[in-house]
Length: 137
Image (cartoon, rainbow, N blue to C red; front, side, top):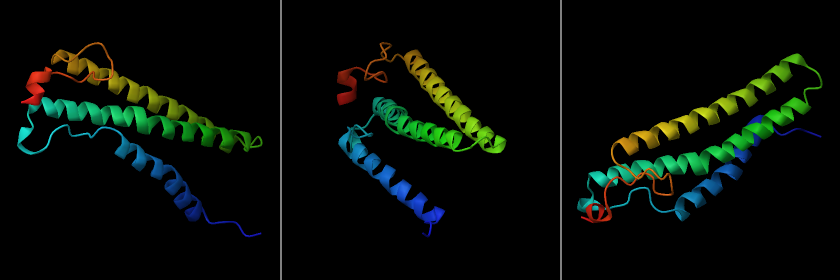
């Protein structure tokens, strides 16, 4: 039986995991909260907050899970080969470090926004700096 080339597997993997992201992106609220001339400085902060939340909450977790699964499969199929075990461990450690860095970046961003006067409750709309009246103008 002939094996499928790595390029075919990569393309199949990208297609299967990219399509849900496009659907998810169209089902959430738009990243830009205004259109045309009604935009003001408050909308810039809101757009950046929405984009950051979309990346941290919707894109990073699936990719981290995929990397954990790949690392686990590599670990169990290494069969005692030290180079494969080291590669599996490095993928696992890199994934954990990546998640930690992204979480730290989110925390720093929230703190910067709170310095500018955003809501400090860390709820859904943590990026709201301006009041409702100012953002509607």
